[in-house]
Length: 80
Image (cartoon, rainbow, N blue to C red; front, side):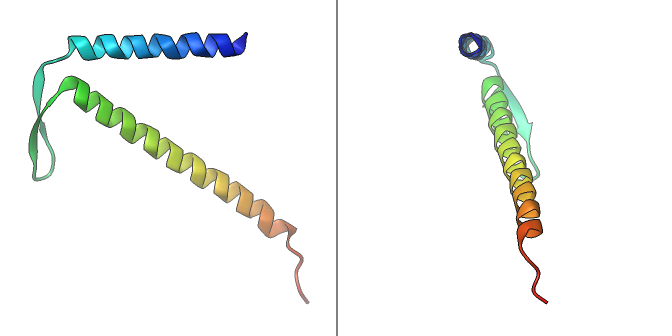
């Protein structure tokens, strides 16, 4: 039952994303440090979404690795 709920939720988010992409075709200026780009609102949203997902995965992997190495260091016997 919960898998069906997750599937429906993912499909709903995809449909909302496609509708958002179809509606927001206007072009806006984006000023970076030395670059000025003209991008659609949808492109800007996708860039920030992908950046957030990548940063989240990096942080999750880092925290997981820190937790595993902390337990690994405790389990190694000390030599005297």
